[in-house]
Image 1: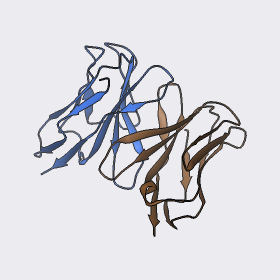
Image 2: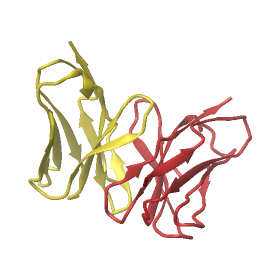
Image 3: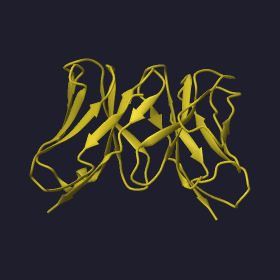
Length: 111
Length: 110
């Protein structure tokens, strides 16, 4: 069954802590994306990756980091430099220019 | 910078009524997407509009694209409660980046 998985579903972070959100896809898509959603807002692009070992900053990359060591995986690290990380994080994948398929999301809360 | 504006942002409508959600964007693009989001859930793809004049329909929803006017519409026919959700339009910026509108929260009441 093809799709995108994200884990964990809920994540709590203490001040000054780095946390990593997982995103895996088995759709054989080349491109993967991370979006952030705040209440009452649309989605904003954090990072995207077109191919393995390559990624580009989106509109709000500060305080975040990513890696793309495998085609199937695109983890996002929320660092302590991100001052307001509480949000809903959505991972997506696609072939170039095609529709994006979204994962179920991770809800991150800062304690 | 590509800007995407949806209106209305909030919409309460009675069952059985018709309504249209509008999506305007600021720069040239010929690829537009509509998504649905239920509370606390991820985004579900509704329509992909790839060219000027494109029209797609699924059930009570119909989407259209006018690239010259930089406008897409999502028309709801004879609304039912199950259509209550937030609807987003998104415009393709470069083949990789999508710019999203803020979403239209739709509530269908008896």
